[in-house]
Image 1 (cartoon, rainbow, N blue to C red):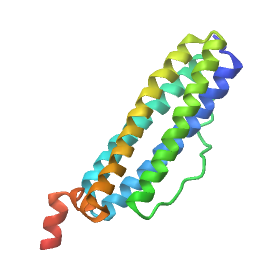
Image 2 (image 1 turned 135 degrees about the vertical axis):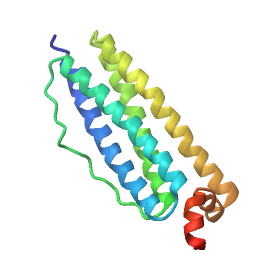
Image 3 (image 1 turned 180 degrees about the horizontal axis):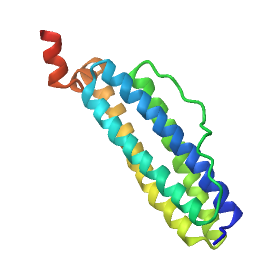
Length: 164
């Protein structure tokens, strides 16, 4: 069943956005792990899996609607060197996704594509939850200070290795 052109366009853009997010969060998780900030790295790895799930859901829908998938293109990936910069990047990406998915959902609905509308609305809720998580981390950093916040994200395994 060939889907409306507007839905195919939005699904392809969402695929690119999700793949970019997966790669960005993978890089962030690896850097955090390298820095010994294992608890936050674990959380980022969980986010990677959620974003990868979004990618697969968008891809499945695009293929169902007989669209051609481009899984090679990525938006530029930002190299962040501090935890605060990582959260800034995440917040920017998640806000962009939320705004885009809201628009895409409305346009899919207007085109009579209720399946794509439902998909975008469902994933939009996940993006809002991640925005809330990042905003909470900023609040905690303000409350505790960056140094104490980071020290709370270091696992006991990393702390033991430093003591040895």
